[in-house]
Image (cartoon, rainbow, N blue to C red; front, side, top):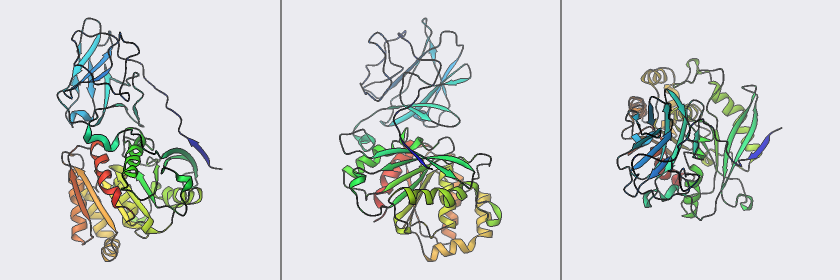
Length: 389
């Protein structure tokens, strides 16, 4: 029997935290209730965003010999070293940053730790990241605003394909219970360093959807965010040979989609079904869309692409599948990548060239950003209003 749980809170982890005091007076912070805050007025915050958009990070680790700091606020640059003061507080102040929501983490003598002052952390399977907000008018699209809010549910379903219980997160639009009829559905896949909760934590997709609805830019839809990691199987960045479905696709096709259609009021028509994914999730979305085009009419892969060897394999073995899509294209097929995303640059170019070679209609959007949610959030703001039109 399926069990449905409404998300109620998060458990904080970690072993070290920022402490009071610092040798240098920090820039005057701009108060933001979503950012880490001190427990008393005598304590300095672990993350202080100043009016000039510089950020000061602090962590109390008196016995440490080295503390470094990483995160997408560095825009792809290597981790930076913090400076220790006489009280054992390590500090680093960034240069001016473009307003956004950014991840960060501390590494203390080689051990990655969470900032336990912050309630905002990126729940990932293989790393520890907090995030902080630097809001201004340009980030209103993902701000927590006084608008009608959708509901996010954490839902357990049984996967017969994998012989295990699996979790998904589901976003239901504002006033879902009052909406009549079958709704369109978007399946949204995460990257290799994330899991099914990441889109509604650091990704802020629920706030983005809330605000798009409030501005009248979206058709009512249900957004399903599954777990992309499949135990016991390697993560593939290309379609497996022999036309055999990979384990993730088997679960999606045979278990997840039927569960969603049984549990929620969703349409089964392809013109009411969209698929999107970031990085690893983008390849998973491509695999499903290209080899099951009868299911989807809106395809939005981001920061992704097949390895060149995967492109050669598809061109050799699956030309008929690409020709079929060229003859009956998707209503919207839009790929996107951050301008400074070097990680997926070669894969993206190879995949786009393959689509061009087979005359598969598609569009390509390139925005500022690296391989992170900083790009993905802005890409989704542009493409989601195009869905189900």
